[in-house]
Length: 422
Image (cartoon, rainbow, N blue to C red):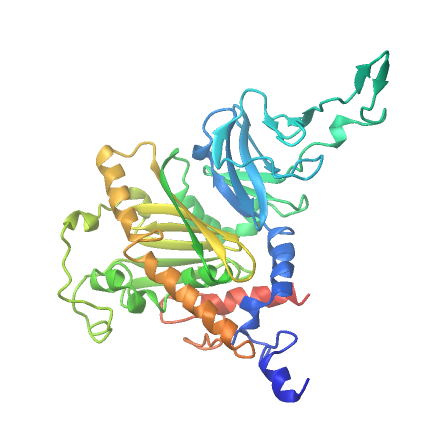
């Protein structure tokens, strides 16, 4: 292979410096790197979001979801006990559960292939023909005499719960969930999930043809909202002149973007932005029927990214989780769970549902993000030797009291390089 071909189609990832302000396109496209990411970020040393306790309120209720690219089941196996088990039969490896939600209080989980049956907690409790079949005075077949059901249950993940949110880890030695988040991010997590019972308002699902890290980046990127999103900049929900802060954990893997809504309409910083539409009006003004809530404590929006698997959103009265589910290096499923609180009034519930129309696959705001991620991935695949530029606000990594920076993206890749190059 000549030098030109080698430069155009590099064999391994190349960073221009020890910093992370210039991210190689190969970080988003290379299959071997993607498999290494799954192992190091999803299957070892990290907690992953799996759901909300409110999704499985009764004993036997379950939700099928994923950790990385592995199918798992979150199930309420007793009054106040939740298990997460891998959706792989211990017999022949079949993904036995196909429903997204359901109840298995009676009988537990049964694999349809050979009818192996498991308790809600994943213990093997039934094996057809385990002791063989009697025929003509003799016993045919059966499992070996030393077969022990206790050794052949479903793979059980480590589970952590906080504030009604459920996390799971394949790694039994993973640090505590609280240490994983760190005190700064934990404070914002507890602000949203403050002990009140949650209620599920609905779901959105979409397949985005882009690398999974791009959605983490998108919510760590305060540069684009006031430029890309007409809704945000025109109605003052999120733009560069809002009072804001950016916070990270000590590893720079998790982040919180905190913003307080300012005035909508004209301002020196936004009148030259093409996405600002001064004449834009709402046919239904209730979309901006915003009512401050006591738990906000000031900010009108806090967007948290818990690396690698979830975004926790409060944008005015709309609250949701966004679960990132990788599917190879070039696509991911994105599952939105919109929720409220058990003590919400009917008016507040309707307000949350209306404002949720800003988000989701066809949301007035979020539809833009899915499209730019898809087009970014196309660009990466076109030029595998090239790199992105994330140098707004400099090349360093640190918390800020403004949004005119890409520091959170640089921070995430600082952590990425540390783990991937170890």
